[in-house]
Image (cartoon, rainbow, N blue to C red; front, side):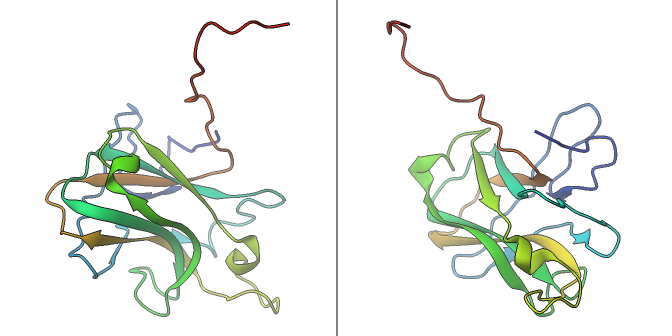
Length: 170
């Protein structure tokens, strides 16, 4: 996984200090009312972001969620830094149920960014929006606990798979 821990330029929710002890953004939106990430990435400053390869946002549960039925995590682009002017989704997790990992610390969910929509240029398929961030929406009861750290990465960390013991290798 490629991650810039020294400058935290790729973190859009929460913080990742050099010590490596991440903190999460308390993404506790009232059900039906989306909340945007605390940080955004200026695509005019981040030149060649992911050029030639896939880009993902890794959403890591830092504090377990409670109460909600499901949560949707989106990668968005917008015309302004607070991510409120003309926001558009360029990737989505879809609705993730509480029991599918939102209630478990260190669960990770990856959302691929559509590269044709990310390019901040005048190409016809580009939206030309300047800032990249995240948006969270809860469904069901509003949670009272839960936080997320979200950051850009080029690879999906796949080292969390565990296979049962007792199989033979031939």
